[in-house]
Image (tube, rainbow, N blue to C red; front, side):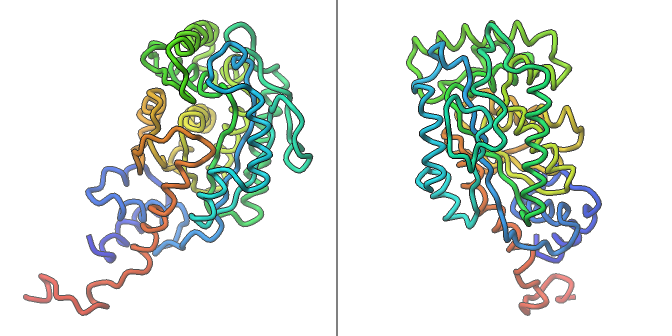
Length: 342
């Protein structure tokens, strides 16, 4: 497909972004069309201020031995993000994006510069107690919306949500398995790399938490309160608000995509503003992508989180914008066409 025909397709979609781009035979061209639809202009503008927000939070289930790392790692990694030494910082520099980290529910003290929106210290152990109180879940949703507004008002034209929290693949799996009616063992992965004993402990936690979640499977706010967490609720609000503000988002791995499923329940149609950056090694991630009807741009067996998969996919999205907006048409390049030959 040459640029002219791709631009015509994009113009037909300017009123509403659509996931139908993924069914087009040329995905890079279709991505450019999607960006044009999001921006409401054709050809689309290249992204000038891509912004990653890493939502950090601890989870009580970490005490049940579901992770290969201790909960203290979360606060340590937040400090690493602030210092610019984490994987997400490196990938952001390569992809011409910037990083912000926000302590939503870290079980420890963090730099005051990142803890202004802190909801609580760690969310509850969801296999035996609610993750949040009623007030806390609404506070966390509002925090996510406020963060999205801050970034967009500051000029962000593309958003990415990243996650950091020991044990956070467990609530992500619970949420996705509950919403897709999937058996725990079919939805579970190894997270940070737990051994067989850790995997069995995780299976028991997921099973018990799904039993607690079942009565709330049609209520996204109740799910966040009972088996989610403050970080999940904040990401949910962030993704829903990005769509309300007509700002495109690249989704990351299983944690962010679990929140995306809930955001789509809260704000039906929000997924039109999102593209899936990659497919992680977690089985629940594919379940969530299927439920959202999104096809990932990359499949590289990544599982780090932090927004790393979305950042790795960002150059592909930039390439699609460049191909649609900057390539010469056949006429401009003096290339013969079938019409010209006749």
